[in-house]
Image 1 (tube, rainbow, N blue to C red):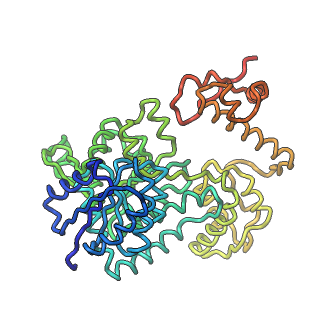
Image 2: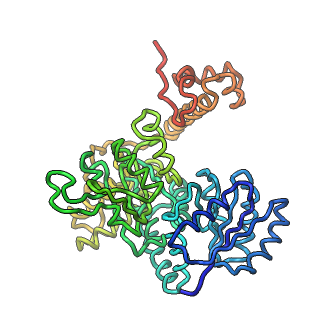
Image 3: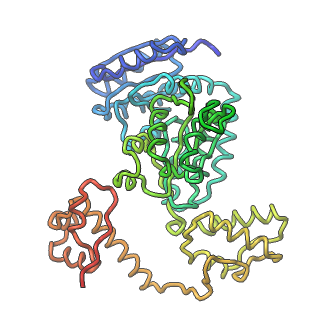
Length: 482
């Protein structure tokens, strides 16, 4: 590899982030790359952009660290866009004191390659630098393009709610940020995690999936961190943990809410320091592993009830993908059914080639509590049990009898959707205003009396929203007393 150099471009020296990052690099024995530091005061975005255009060519950097504070983020957007326009091939890593999740995607979209926030750890930063430098090789770029095609082929759907989340994946994959994926069972959380891995610079390293809920609590720490000989009665030999096996790659922790309090604390240390200690060992080990987690519950609810540590949740929830259930993306059912039909007809050497209209109608009417996985199993079962070219309604073995299902009339469907909308809208307003009916009515631009009537209509008690002022999930409304 040719001699490389880094440029630390500090546009907010008063924040102290630049000096902190410099000290991190200087204290590391693993950085043998020339390090250049340049600071500049942000007077106007226009002037700073002009100065950067002069500064960058002077150093000819292979990676630019754009150092700022969240307080001056409006300048960051302008400078980042300028850097990506003028210096298109130089990776830009943002360094900020904080970076709210809602802004992460915007920064990645306009060209940020990655971002880091304090505390700065060389074990976290150095692997990112090496991977970015290695990506300059043509063979790496060809391989990356191939993996992008392979990864995204596994994700099927065109509904807006689904695409809104899936379109974030290529952006997220470029960085090493920790990802939390939530969604009901069967919505495709592991498929998304695998795709992030395959689109990332870690694609040649292991992807290790772990179902935390399937491993007994007393064994989970051993599975993750490994053990040394004599750590417990039956430990006759040392065993590496899954973190060691995933070194350089991605560790996917499904059902993360199943972790015990002790395991959460150890995981937190690993997230912060990239360090862990095998059971029975006095030696601290290091590993370069990206963590992706998933849960089929809202982790913020588990935090509110004390079942999940708040500090661990904040570490995991850097980037949050929320996968919608299949009932909220019914327009994707024909696409998914077609995909599964083709897949299993080929696998089992069957002649099944299409679904009859009545079979498709049944599939569209179901609520699919098991989501995409349940639909897949229904189609696979139909292919296995049928010798016909067309899969009919009678070939579908459904989880419950649906032969008498009737399509809702327009008025019935409209009434149901209106009730759902009004209920959710009122609950959100009351939540935002801590149960203050007057303020909620003003926000809705309705008079207070009309707003009260709507609450009574849907049996919503405003008192329920005064006790949890900071919750992000609406409490269950109390039913109106008879």
